[in-house]
Image (tube, rainbow, N blue to C red):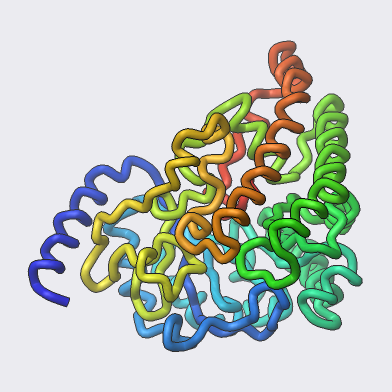
Length: 380
């Protein structure tokens, strides 16, 4: 890296530090390795792109973040972050005033002691629905291990954290059945991502057919359940529905709701700072390095998203898909079509929620869900 380039990074980083104005979500990869090999992601990152042991010390990470964010939210990520519990504990010790969360497959929960778990504000456990769905994509016996981790954290550890089910939704999924099943297990909230980035399970045409026949009717049923509970004074933690209603009724999104590249960054195990935590090998995603600073680069959305009538609700959906079009434009447009239909289905029922707010039966803040606090996806 040349001296001139490094100087440019330092200037850009200084502007970032002076103009940050709010807390940022920081993903911290503890390893590129994973102990599972789920069918939709393939398991571990290559150690050439995300080393399986961090090359940066916990103290260096803590100093880098503290210099840029006085009230950081730090989420441990991987790979499977619990393959490196010592690193998690070292970072938490070095950052006593940070707010912490973790995204984990849940199979190694006991690698952290109860007192460490009780420091987390949010825990995301990866699970796709009932046993036959989860195990078919994640591996035999995974459902049982995750359900046991949920019970252990709530009943024995008494961590006091929000525990969120982190779903991948694929061909075998039934969105209403699977979301309500996970809520019935005791999860505080559920969010999901459609299996439409790396998958070979289907192409754009099959995905659209499935969405029309199975997914969107299930979204309608979830919407109606959400509204019925809201009319009883209870706001269900169905994150995509809650997040879309926030955009429609409380506060619109001016960027991708996950914040990637503007309001959230990831620190890879090699010390690189990334715009997106899954983009460990893609050159466009490098935002800097903790030993040098941030380079000030700003990601860009596709022009079609900048012009879209639903940009204030969708925000552009997913930064990664703007740069990595595995399905090409046809696939991008297919997912966009399902996103728009999802928004319209919720939009047509929004007056019911607005009436609850206007009549004082539901607090406006009850819909003001900030996905950056939980590292969730509100646009699947």
